Amino acid sequence: MKRLASVLVVSVLVVGLCPLASEAEQLPGPVVGQPAPPFTLTTVDGKAVRLADFRGKTLVVNVWGSWCPPCRLETPDLIAEANAGASRGVVFLGVDTTESADVVRAFVAAKGVPYPQVVTTGTSDFAKTYDIRNYPTTFVIGPDGVLRARHADNVLPRAQLHAYVAAAQRGETAPLTSAFQAQLDALLDPAQYKFDGDPASVHAAVTQAAAAIEKADNLQDDAMDDLSRDHDLLRTAAEEETLRAKAIAAFAPVASGDADLVLLARLRGDEAAALGHWAYADASYNEALKHAPNDVDALSGQAYAASHLGDDARVAVLDAKIVAAAPSYSTYVSLGRALAKSGNLAGAEDAFAHAQRLAVQSPIATAWTNLYFARMESAT
Image (cartoon, rainbow, N blue to C red):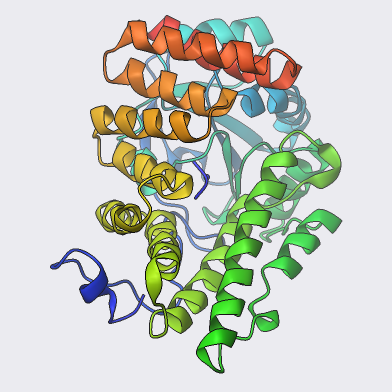
């Protein structure tokens, strides 16, 4: 599980939870090709903006945060595309769901961002309706009000953003195409995993599918700042969910022994998290931890679920266990953020100090660590 079923589940998980469907469900959030959900927001200058106000124009909504390295990386391209598109009826709107208006004003002034900015919260109607989990996330809405692109992570290179915008102006969608995306598509193609046959064959196929999903996640993490490996995070997540659902349906009747039950519970937890079913995800990861108390993937998944359930204290406890099992700059950063959010600022500063020491050999890791640390400092 990155921080980004079957009827037998009742006997495996907490009694009273309903199993998810054995076929892949659609991921939450607005659907490309369908009308964009309406919204009413307020800019940092106090002006009300509604989706309906932009009818007849192509609207690019960029959800971002000044603490977010990929957001900073794509800012020059967003500015350039906004300036270039202004004469063609293309308008941009920035939305920050994590920071104050003062922080947003300072950032856009320093960077020369020319388009209006909104400050809202991660629990706002907008954040829920548009399923804001990734920073940045960019939505392109056509003049007809139809959502034409939904891109999680930075939109790089700029040519991809321009393709989204140009297609939206024509009333079309422009799917992302790249050699790297084709690699991800092939890796996650369910046809290559034989989920039928005897229990041993099913076990082998499920193990291979789980490894493929993990590999796809790792490849995307590695490609985050690589312009030559642009990819569609949400499309890949949907492909992962299709493969995962098939693996769960095949594995549930034959899973036996601790290792199998841990894998099955983790798969169910990952599925529930992808679909936004946080209580079910929490219970699934908890089942995995009954069989393997130090399983880092299950701990990480449960921490992710607990954060969405608003249990900050438990997130900090789980992140401390992860650090003990797998110390790294990133796990210490997660711990520092969790401790700060739960009110333990001294513990948070200590965790960030550990992260900075572990990140010192990597400029990128150091930048990430310092940005998150600065976000904590500015919030306190």
